[in-house]
Length: 201
Ligand SMILES: *[C@@H]1O[C@H](CO)[C@@H](O)[C@H](O)[C@H]1NC(C)=O
Ligand SMILES: *[C@@H]1O[C@H](CO)[C@@H](O)[C@H](O)[C@H]1NC(C)=O
Image (cartoon, rainbow, N blue to C red; front, side, top):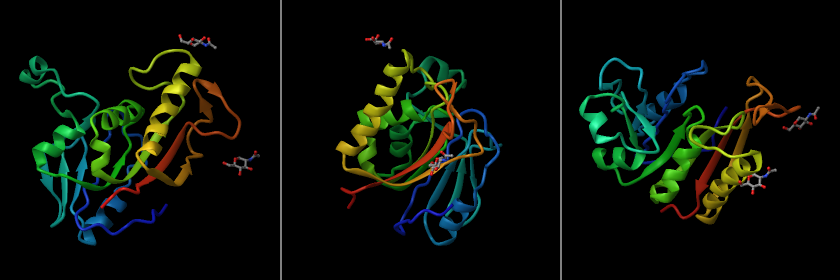
């Protein structure tokens, strides 16, 4: 799979696996971006140390993106403190902009997308490459099917209103053909959607 990328001066690529890392854990993309001189940060909660530098431009961090910061009381006990909002991570790293954000967060993408939109973090991102999962509503999304679909649609619509343009879609045929817990012929429960921020400067 290849993405028509604008070659960025400094790219922050986040690949965040919040829960299960289901196969397909291909880091060739990150490595080739780093080799071409982009600054690449990969977020993976399963690594052994807090920060590992793999090359001149490639870092691994024991962190994953969430749609909320940890409760301070819980963070004090160092439980779940590996998850943070993207806005918080950017502030801590001193980054204003991300050229490319690539995320596979195993169904947490809807709440994370909502958080990025509500906090205007999405405007700091040049290109979004998100794996979306539609076999169930996702974390903390409830309601009947039409409520869930309206919620998903409203997030995609918000991106459009912010002048994000969908430029590539990929249907993962290796995943079950499911839509909201029902079998759906010739559908996939997992798509990779890529948008470019046309207001990006
Ligand atoms: C789904 O839930 C919404 C909000 O609770 C309700 O207005 C709507 O009638 C429900 N639709 C169906 C098909 O049950
Ligand atoms: C399955 O979906 C693809 C689009 O994703 C379409 O091109 C193809 O014709 C469909 N196949 C069948 C058998 O409906």
